[in-house]
Length: 84
Image 1 (cartoon, rainbow, N blue to C red):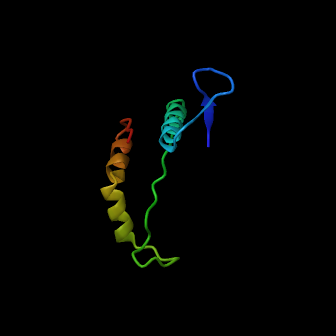
Image 2: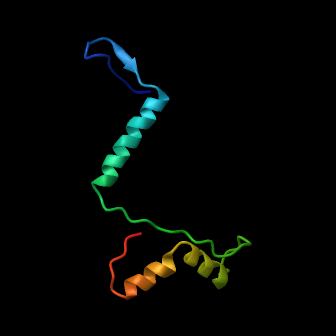
Image 3: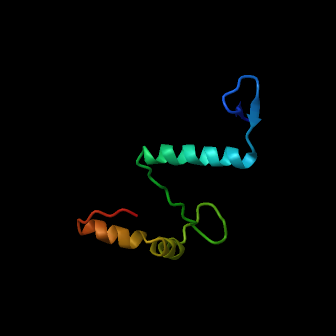
């Protein structure tokens, strides 16, 4: 639990609620993200049976198509800047 001085008076501490902690952490996270250039990784499901070493090309291609990655690659090949 975090606490902070209430109205700047020494000796008196104000407890921050869980919601207050969440809002503070979210605000700090957003400030940190705004200072950086984040990159995202897309996870693809290789097969419907959850088996290792099995790669179903149709399922992966469908996920890439639905996620807009095929269009992004086509735009990039044409030389246009693309930001997803």
